[in-house]
Length: 86
Image 1 (tube, rainbow, N blue to C red):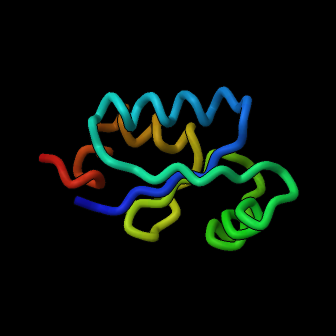
Image 2 (image 1 turned 90 degrees about the horizontal axis):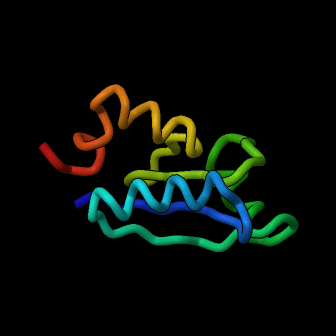
């Protein structure tokens, strides 16, 4: 099972949407609270190549983007493979 990390901030509807999809997929993930101005937010920005928005999602250390990119992977039928599902 791949390691899934998602950097979020309170009140972010895109974060909620991404988490809801991951929960529906029944995969374990680590939610990292990264409010604006926090060290965690800086870490997410650094790891994502400078992206400043949340959520930022990483699968096995690889940045896949935010909620829109996660939903695009799901729509294209590519998310399950990344999540270690056939």
